[in-house]
Structure formats: structure tokens, C-alpha cells
Length: 353
Image 1: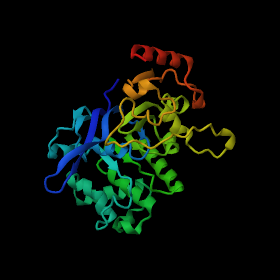
Image 2: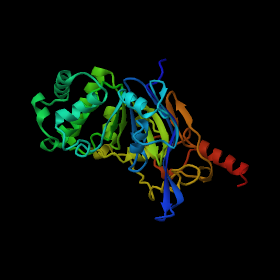
Image 3: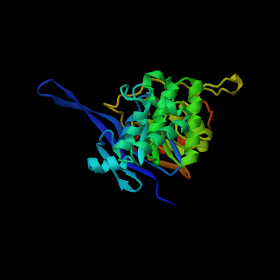
Image 4: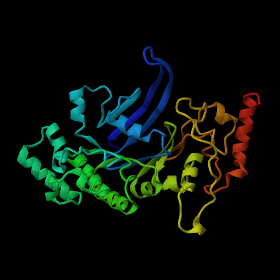
């Protein structure tokens, strides 16, 4: 077993909320990311999925230290980057790059495409002017653009072409890890397919590892090797792609999968819509964070934070009833299985009713 390329342990980002102009006083804390742990192996794609506002993009920036974590550690190639100085951190970024969500905002409108792609090479002192120009032309060909387009500016390209330019820029310094922060969510469906296929081809060619942030589970199913499901700053379930889609063991994961639209009405499952809204990260609920919307929530869910239950090799779920959930596709209105009901009775007896 080789060491993971990326190892995240107990990662957290808490934003202080202050009131007042001159004598500002902290009145609360937004727990955007609150204790994430996961690993990513070389050449692997780990997808982080969840509803908007669950902390996916914050996690992407924490992994690269684009924002500073409040707690936890991030190791890339075995080195803890959370305490690195600015020069050491700059050197580390040769190993890890990012593709941003918005292809329009991620490129400097004052730089030509060639200058934007060459900028990482200049920052890291790679090559001379001639070799950098050759590298830019090579990268443009690699992502399906023509070398002569290096002289053009970002406003002269479509959204899909701009995202290809962002991919070329991320590849410039030959990183081991690329963080993809919803790289196709701003694109048309047909263009999404082209960019996803490009990312897959590049991964096979260069052995890249992707931390793939997304909310479109159809894209995730095509792209990912493993999937981690986030809710309100924490991971609810993590498993390899096949296990998660075939046998989800957390009610939130099941709700997300049930909401995927399917064109054939005969294959549409029974969808139990989630009630209520996502709680505020300023005041997350006690116990299981999902219990305010979970159709199976019981008293133990409201009082006790669920442990990380191992379902199988590499498959974990943070649910008190992960082992006893009804089969996938079961209508939740029927309640829990008899085993789960007995566990609830035992908990009530131990807690005094």
C-alpha cells in the first residue's frame, strides 16, 4: 500500500460573525467546514457532493491553503502544508493546482491566453521565454485549442473554451493533484460532456488525481472513483462509486440519489422529498446534523452525534441506523426495520425513556 497523495484530517474553517462598526464584537461563528477527514490516492478521482452551501468549495480552497484553516491538517505527498511559510507554500503549489468554477472570472481579462498559461511557469521559474512559448502551444493543443489562439484575449472565447484554457493553465507546472471546483456547472450540457471527457483523458495520460467538487450526480457517476457526501460542513457518507449508487447507507445520500431525474418514467423511483430547509451553519443542530430533515429521525439522532460506521471496505456512513436502513428504494413512510426498532427501544430504556 502506497501513502495517499492527499490526506486531510479534522479540517475545519470557522468564520467569526461580528456586530458593530468601531468596537466590533463577535456574536457567533459560522461553521462552514467542521471536521472533515478523507484521503485521495494517486491517479484517483474523489468527488465531494452535496447541496449548495454545504462547504464543498470552502474545502477546495482549504486543501490548497487559498484560505487558512481554523483547525486540522492537510498533507500532500506526506508533507503537512498547513504550517508552511509563503515561499515553501509557493513551491508546494507545483504539486497541486485548481480549476475554478467560473470560466469567465478565473482569467485575467488584461492578459492574453498565452500570458495566462505561461504565468505559472514564470512564477515557478520554469524554462526560458522560448521554452515557455513552446510549452504554452503544447498545452493549447492538449486541451483542443490551436497554438495561434495564444495571442487572443479571454473575451474572444466561449465559456467552454475558457474552461479549457483554465485546464491548460492548471496543467502547466505538471501537478500531481488538481482540485476541480465545479468545473462544468457553468457550462451547457453538451459542453459539459466535452470538458468531462477531456479531464478523463488527461487523467489517463498523466496519472492525475482529482478532487472533484460537484452537485450534479450524473457527472459524478461518470467521473468519480469514490464519492464523499457532504452536509452542513461534514461528511455523511463515503464509498466507492458503485457501492454508493447501488447501496447508499445514509438517508441524505438516498434523498440526493432519488432526486436525480430519469427520462424513463418506468424507472423512476419513489421520491420522498426532504422537508424543511438546511439549518444555518451559524447554529448547527445537536446530534446528527441531518435530523431536522430526516424522515427516519429518532430521539437518539437529536441527542447523540452519530459515529462513523463501517459498512464494508472503504464504505462509511455517519448514521445511527446505517446497518439497519430499509433497502434502497424503500418508502421511508414505512419506518425502520425491526432491528432498528429494537435498537431504539434499547436506547430509550438506557436514557430513561
